[in-house]
Each structure stands twice: as structure tokens, then as C-alpha cells.
Image 1 (cartoon, rainbow, N blue to C red):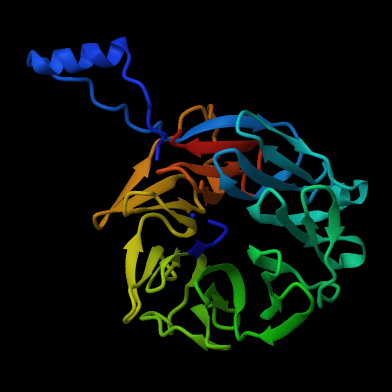
Image 2 (image 1 turned 45 degrees about the vertical axis):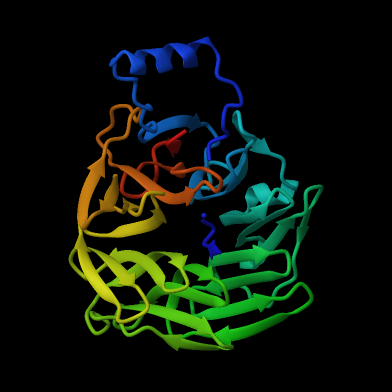
Length: 351
């Protein structure tokens, strides 16, 4: 089972008059109407929360969450939004959380939602929603440490990764910590294997760490000795992993199919988040704005409807594949003015 925070139609039991008419039309040689294509990328909600989107997570077509952190200028508050299958609305958080710098949200079910961020005294924290209440989860984190990625596989199987290379695994009772020679940015898992994407900070070299068989190793990347980094990763199978970032000058797609890692150049200067598109390809967002599809060895930039007019690029900060759907994806972001986002938007692809 793939996990990165990211993963048929119900059949109609009756054939009514419309179905009979279609069948009759086909019998008369009249071509039946083709199924409508999935709706493309569009803005589905503009949020007036005065925060800045950090991440989005989905566990089904009816359950998703998105996190806004309090902006750096101090002119707003952190917030958690929840999708209930019909609309997005704020989910109540403990009062103190609104002052925190929330970093992200991950979930495996409606009763297992995790938040991470930085609280009072620059102390990083983890918190879990069990379906009834929020409760902080004690973790071996020190002041000024920044959690950069959280991998939630279940209530008793959670990994955290911090900016200076810290890693911790929770088994539901206690934590076990590790030290990685890299700055982690994103993580993914399949079966008993965990992949962590990031870079080596001193020389800014791309790096992917692999947890397997109870130990950490590092992937041999073709451009591992040249400047660049890996910022997004997804596991499509036990021997199929895709990651995105840059190679020092352009966007890059890192591919592993059980053998050697390969690097393919991608559009733009850098890619930041990646998810499967549901039909053998990938969606990847760019740090400079826009979202791209990679399929059949080709990159195509997708259009986004409803973004409005702005002199600033439309940046999708995070993407989340919607489990239980054929190809639907949530995304969060907004128009980026170079230092702050000028608005907070939720995007969707598919139904």
C-alpha cells in the first residue's frame, strides 16, 4: 500500500428510459455520447483565514483537511479546514493552536488526523485528533527544531523528520530516534520501506534516504555530486518511486524502478510536490507557479480556472491524491508575491 499522505464508480443498478434510448440509438447506428472527461484544475474555494496554506491531506472523497499557518507578519491566525464531502469549513482547534506556526497535516482516517508545527517557546509539537478530541503527542523534539515532514501510517506507526536530520519513529507507546545526514523535506512509504527526500545542506546536494530492514541507507542518485535537491516524493509500488526537485538549474524528476535511479529534466526552475495522476502519469507543482502533468515521457502544463487576475504566479504548495477516486486531486496555495501569499486558495482536479 502506498503512503505519502497520498493514494469505481458505483454502478447503476437500473436501466431506465434514458438507458433504453441510448441502447436504441446505438442499435440504429447513432453513436452514443462518450463519458465526459474529468473536470480540469480549478479554484474551488477562496479562504479568508488570514493565514498561509502549508499542506493538504485526504483519506477519501468525503474527508480531507488543509492547514493554514499564522503568517510571518503576525497579521493572522493558524487554522485547520475540513472537507466533509460537500463543503470546506474550519475545524475547531484548541485556542492555543491558533497562535502556532502549523507546518502540516497528515491522516489515515477520520479518527487519525495529525498536526505538526511550532508552539510556545519555539517548541515543536505533534497533535492527534482521535475523532473526538485533540491531544498533543509527547515526542523527542527540542526547542528550535523544525518538523519538515510527518509520515502517518496508522495510530501506532508514525515517523517525523526534522530540518537538521532528526528522525523519529512512534510505535504507539514510545519513540525511537535516528540521525540522517541530510535535511529532510518530504517522505513516502510502501510496505516496510520508507523513502525520505531532501538535500545535503553544506553543498546542497540532492539526497534520498531509504529505511529498509531496520536501517537507513542512501540512494545513489546520478546527479548526487551536483547542486540540487529533492522536495517531493511518492511511492507507487515496492519498486516504483518518483520524486521531484531540481538539478541546480532546472526542475528534475527522479525515478526508481527497482534498479538504478534516473533523472529526467522537467519544466521550470524547480518542482515541489508530486502525486500520481491515476492513469500512469504524475502531477507536479512548480515553485515558480503552475502545475504540470508528466505522462508518456512528456511534460504538459495544465490550465487552472478561477484563479482570477494577478501579477503574481499561482503557486500550488501541496498536492494530495484523493483515495477512492480514479484521478481526483486536492491542492492548496495561492498567488505568491515573492515574500507572502496574497490570497489563500483551494484547488481541485477531477470530480
